[in-house]
Image (cartoon, rainbow over all chains, first blue to last red; front, side):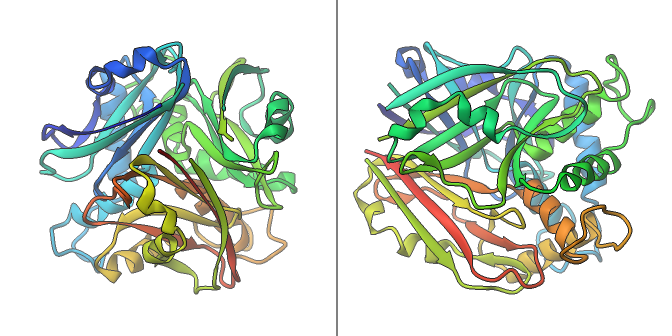
Length: 139
Length: 139
Length: 139
């Protein structure tokens, strides 16, 4: 069984946003999968996806603080700066975190740990709406 | 063919641990897969999985040294600190390294390079036992 | 439908190289897949794969500059140094970036964003030819 959908995330502020519920709500087919994998893919090179703590919003705030320090903005550090100081750092963060997450599906539900959620990571100051491709493979 | 199993890794010390043999031993079904993928997933947000050098234990020691320097512990740097100084760094390391690895399966075996092994990365001082979900998709 | 191929990338200089066209050209079977996933895997622990900006070569140059600063070479910092100063940094970069990328396949083509391409990331000074395993799962 292969299900595939392209969905749009509305524009969000720069930072880390929990989107587990939004992704799951697009996939009523999940309930009929006994064993499989959900692949969630972002079609951009300046935003990313990761799994992390789903409860305390300060974790997402700390992610933004940490990654902004790890990949500093600078008008002189990078050759590629045509779109502004947040441009090249956004590309680097996208590759440090990754373009997709893959989650086991078991007995009709995402088999995440109790504290795991899907983070949409917006690395641009004004990224606009973002496209995801959801691919569900299972039986 | 879909095979899925949830297994428990015993508690290990903080650091990087080679678990290739342990994962493989849980999957006798591997030998009957001609072409496919093994997805190994960790159900936690303060531990992670990666593939790296499988021979010299000093590589794993250097990983622990490097990542502890890259994501420093601090009682003042992070807002999220309810579980101790190793808490927020563990979440950040988990996303830098990732929650899953996917490995091709070819002619009944994991098609890893000669020097590749599966690392279980424990980022907490006392993480306790950890749950993995193994999903084998193949023909 | 499962298609799997092992291909060799010719030796390239240390740095980040766009290989989307080279990977795609090895998979004429792509055109017959309506929905699925392409998994691209590198069988090495000192080189990696990621997805990022496919147009401006200065992005790839900035990646090399950034990652060389993030994971410094040093004759004293690492215990594992038998193969030279670029050895342990190459292992660390490989895990920061990852050993595989998974890309949705839709209506016979890789469903990448307009600006996304596959980067082969050579972290050794002289890495030599590198092996990839391509696994296409779809219907």
